[in-house]
Amino acid sequence: MILAIEHLAQGKWDKKALLLVSDGGDNSSQHTSKDVLAAIEHAQAIVYTIGLFDPEDPDRNPGALRRLTDISGGKAYLPSERMKLSVFARVSPTTSAAVTHSPTSPRLRAILASCTG
Image 1 (cartoon, rainbow, N blue to C red):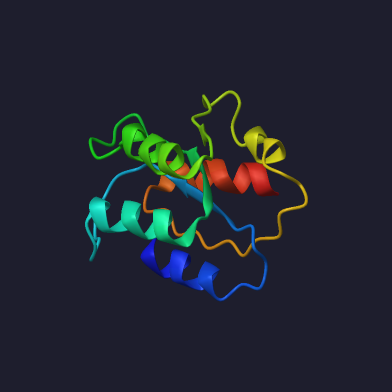
Image 2: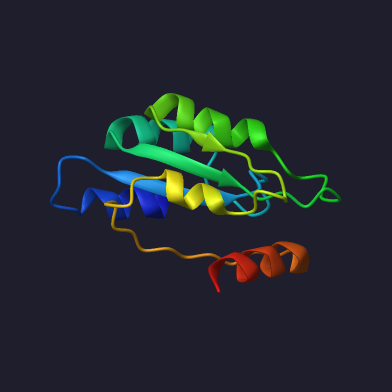
């Protein structure tokens, strides 16, 4: 997250948005959640999150996704499996984005693949 926020700072536009697709779990962070929240406030970026959850993953944390969006004025989308990723359409279609994603769960990789073609 910190790297993505730093990348946003290089942008030329006043309005900045970050789209995070995650389960909210923290499995290898170098920064604390407090650091991330402070960086979001400083960057004045709007954060949107899409939660993808493996029901068998004990590290899933939708609350963390909500905190990121609450502090930035964004919105957390926590779709059911039935909805899959149709929520992408709800985030402004005019937002240009660079997306990186490396899910560790085979189940989440399959869900993402089925929704993105």
